[in-house]
Length: 138
Image (cartoon, rainbow, N blue to C red; front, side, top):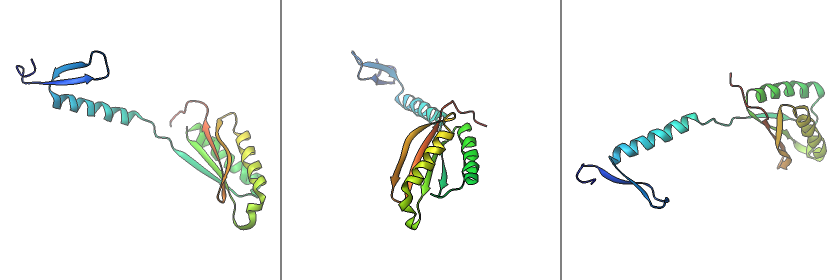
């Protein structure tokens, strides 16, 4: 039938029982598949991660300032990767860094959920937060 119509026999769904085949122009079929994947790719939302850096001795005013920025990022729908960077001998105060990050997470608990609890990797202790509600893009 395909040869009579100068078309191709294309297997659409090989896993189905019985396999589904169609008599269509193969190049047109490939073009439409490419077009669909391009449209899906364009509709995907990219995950943007904003970073906020603290020191182990971050003061209250600096903490509040960074907290305000974090709230703005979360309301815009971005993830936040906050970390405490230990320089030199400040690595001795690991518990201060952990307390600071947990305080940060607690201050943002109404806007964000914790994806990863504080974890020390090298000279940095990370905390990852994701927005709770659906983001409203501006």
